[in-house]
Length: 332
Image 1 (tube, rainbow, N blue to C red):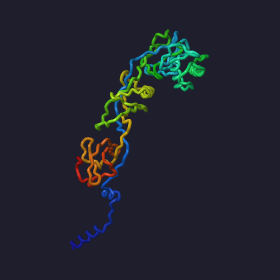
Image 2 (cartoon, rainbow, N blue to C red):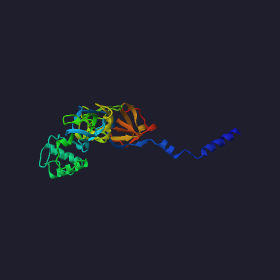
Image 3 (cartoon, helix red, strand yellow):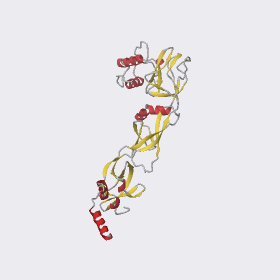
Image 4 (cartoon, helix red, strand yellow):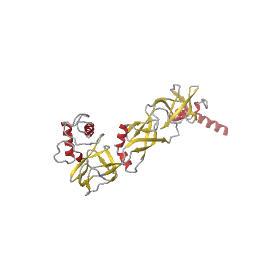
């Protein structure tokens, strides 16, 4: 009787349908995975330090009683805006690459006139980058002066009407002129933070060895080349960083070196293979192996993210074995 029951159970088990989900059947049967190709820039999150020049002072061109001031400690003074009023006359903050050392009027020529043209163009006025103090420059200056409250401007530019700034936007460390003070052009209206001279790049915290090759730093939406000493001094990069709101906020927090983080990566990405981490074996540091067919192939691991390992190899690969299909433990 027992033998008959046992035989019946065995027959029932043998005849029972296989209810294993299809995805598990496929997983059991899977012995290799495809190897894809792509590029890799070796991005690293790095600490950066902003290196600045010494503090500077801003003077107002006019003499008289300070009746209004836009200066606020930790706040910005921007080119193209009113810095203050002296005897209720507006003083225009203006940044030029060459300090405006003289009064300017129609027909004047020189590096200071060209510098003024560049700044007017940056402020949105239609003027050529070089040339004399022309009718177009007069028109642009008049429009700017009217914008900030000048009464009946004639298109000329007097030193007594401006506060020269070394950059398009500066941060006031202190406000030295107080409303009600009697001031003259030799006195400090505001002490401002030094200009950005370079950005120094620190070491990243990754245990992966950095790939060789020229690198660049991306910070606050700007990118610039990192030199052999780990600094970025490209003028366009520095200007973009200095004008960013993030940089201005960091200046308000400390005075000499301001720590933030950016991304260091290769200027020219390298070609890499990408595969499931389960295909990599025999890992020793950044060295590892993959098996394609019967060959165990040495590879150099460069990164891993989102379930994919990136590596380089001297051999061309299209697929790699995984799991129990791997028949060796090493490739070196």
